[in-house]
Image (cartoon, rainbow, N blue to C red; front, side, top):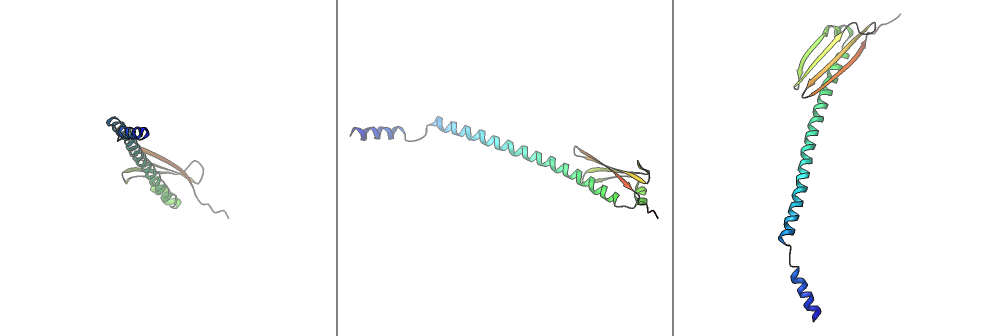
Length: 130
């Protein structure tokens, strides 16, 4: 009988959570959610930066490939080219003669949204020796 009374008293003391326990749990949950939210915002910012870096590199390579694909004479005729593409400023320059005989120096610079990339290429003239 004494054991039954002790168990009944024990159950009466543990009928639920106290207000302080609930407030502590809510505070811990709030800090956890705040940390997750901060992490998400930081991740989105990093994603935007990497996207602009990819855009700058892609635009520069597209321009460079277009110039390198031209014939030697047409590349020289293109000279200096400035244009806008997807909000970026593109400047392409072809200098003849290049650093070596029968070469051209090609430079492409793309700037915008806090990013800049410069590509340099030496284009050789195809010379047939007989």
